[in-house]
Image 1 (cartoon, rainbow, N blue to C red):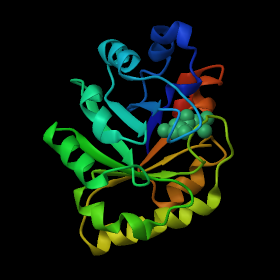
Image 2 (image 1 turned 90 degrees about the vertical axis):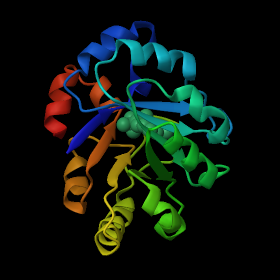
Image 3 (image 1 turned 90 degrees about the horizontal axis):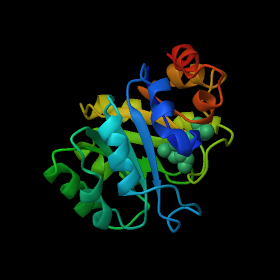
Image 4 (image 1 turned 180 degrees about the vertical axis):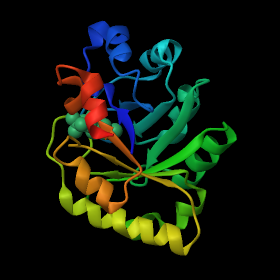
Length: 209
Ligand code: DX5
Ligand code: ZN
């Protein structure tokens, strides 16, 4: 299981120290919120660029924005591995094209109320599918176990269509919820509050792995 800690729960006044604590993770998950697609504002390109300069890990950037087309270029750093947009946002097709043109891996996310059926036409272009296991916008919410049906469905579709995207989950991941994710076929899990509220984030990452 790949683990991508979300820095949303980190102490932003001490970001570099916080990043050092999660060096044993596989990726860093950056939650970008525009105050419109979700009812919260997190951080934008400037802070993300600073993180990209001090981080040794690949960046997994989750764009919770209404107009990804406008923002994509501003999040392309040398270590941006995935740029994930939401199917519920504007201009999905053009945004996917733009991410590919930037030589970054394409991620597509779906909110809890969105069906897997809606993303099927785009799956052939995806390197990653992010299944939200909470309503996007805030850290520290409870895991929605019924989202595992979507993971199982995606595993089946991936096999049938001979595709190779990773399946990622985001929201409410902890030592209590990681097992059902593994059993359902998740490849990569995002964890925010579980990692950063733990007395030793390195132990938290290990226990999830
Ligand atoms: C929610 C974000 C998540 C969130 C996860 O909008 O996409 O990445 O920070 O936080 P926890 O692990 O606390 O649910
Ligand atoms: Zn996220």
